[in-house]
Length: 246
Image (cartoon, rainbow, N blue to C red; front, side, top):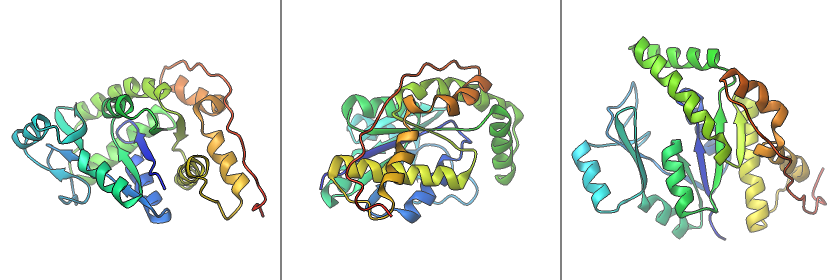
């Protein structure tokens, strides 16, 4: 069974990492690519768990040797995904989830246009600011200049939402996790014919509602809050046989 490459991106502080953690608890057969970075660990982060932490010199050596599927500089630090992550997932027949920024996502799409793009939006600037400040406090450092730099960058990143097929608004963790899980299951159903044993039609409907072109009413107030105008058209996914619905 062919593996599916999922790309998930979001502005810093949108709760993306939490969504990925919850998805991995609930969905089997999906590997997670642990990124490499030159930044120092935060709080309780451990090498090889959240990131592979390395020096800039070593990172640049890996770039020169072509070891990265994608890499980018974000807030002065380098981040990248090793090609080996994709090779290992394909060899095992698993799907692969990449948690990467918009720069890295663009590189991957250029090489693998069949990848499934998922963009996570915070509900509004105020909530994003609160999340960023709370995270900084948990790490023991509150830098207001850094906070506002990240908020400014968030608006620029959010403008890239148009490049992703699915959009989630993370205003409710449980709902966003359910939507993310539905997207994975729906893509497996359509691409690989993988059965959905429980309430298949509802799962497909939840995923279809997250398609960028079908989320106009949900996205409009969020985009306007960040000063972004959206343009949408309607998009449909066909529903398969729903004989296994309850």
